[in-house]
Length: 163
Image (cartoon, rainbow, N blue to C red; front, side):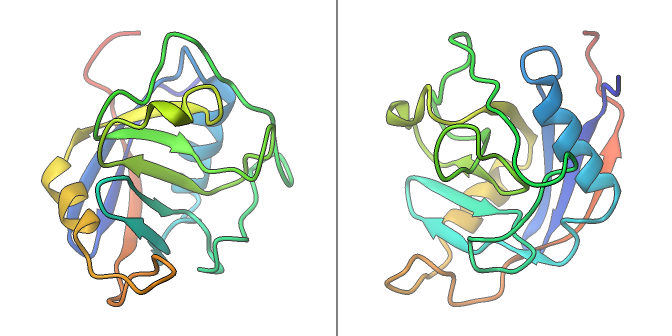
């Protein structure tokens, strides 16, 4: 199993995501593989809610698209050990239980009401200033950014800690 982290090169700078391979192996494999395949390249952050989260990973840019490497949707890997305790938590976006695809979000603040509802599969290791910058982008009434903020390219980097 891969133990690497993923780097998102965004239009506002670089974000390194540490993946929680032990706690959410299928979710990490999905995110990692999609990133390695270039699936997220040129994909916009289509939903930004200040002091809450930034969401991306939908190649259609609508918030309704995206597929997993498993073909369609896949099951949750929710654990009581991981919580949405603050800014920088990386979780799968979904439309209900066991509906994970390619979309993900990064929290901008504690969001305990999401605990038990979204699979947490990583955290921002480097680039929190970029995440906060994305969180301050001006949006319309539907939380869509008025400027085009996107993931330019993704790639894997070796994890620094042992698992």
